Image 1: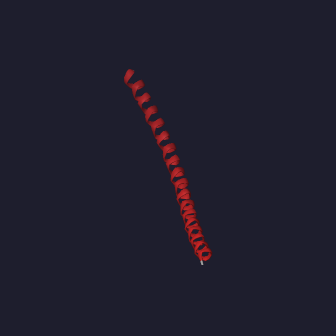
Image 2: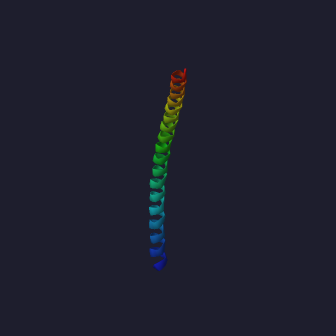
Image 3: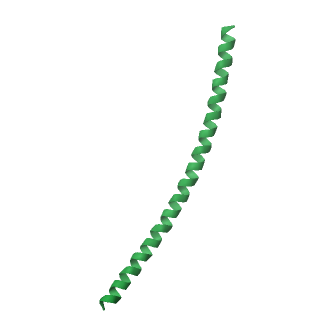
Length: 65
């Protein structure tokens, strides 16, 4: 009788583990998506910064002359 109860308990643990693994996979996918957005925004900000630096440099040269 104990073996049957132990087997049922083990089966419940396996099902719970499968459920938690599914949730973790979903969370990892969401985090990857959010990281991708951050990387895209970072690239956009870097481009804006580079343009601003170039514009500032041009202004400084124009003021010097």
